[in-house]
Image 1: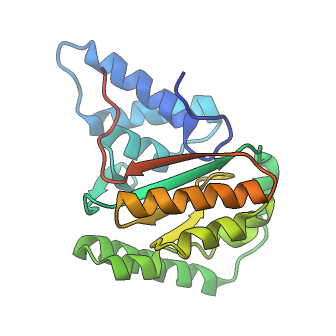
Image 2 (image 1 turned 90 degrees about the vertical axis):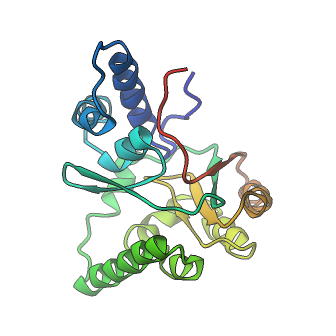
Length: 220
């Protein structure tokens, strides 16, 4: 009962892999560091989902926001008050079709544009600059191609941005949608509006609000 729906874009298979290695590690006389557990959890994720997604494994192990650079895991600073609202519509996105939409060639300029957004986003985090983070929390590669698979996406995204979101986009492969906010109150208020936008598109949806800078997996 991990509470993560299958095919939700919320890293469910990674959660299972991380839970397994963290639990096994707790039984060791000399436990390994979280960083040392990474390759084992990654192997479990590969078995479960057919591919390795370090971007899901790393934050679940270390907590918070983590930059994956090969085998190096770099936890990034996020202001403690910042929260994320995630809305999961009761919808199944066909993985094969979602991947198919990314196969067509991209213009080089799109990658240059996304690289600029990534640099601005990381710089904003290092400075604790909400305005800079908000200007660059953007996806110009995947979102334009996959958003059409999520009914009501544009309205859900607009509901978040109109209520103070720093940015909002598709979580993982979808269909869940996330939005960052500077505090919990904003996240909760906007999250309700995001859920209502999905409902207006004919989809029931669940809302989760959480701090971004939180702890990784723990054994109770």
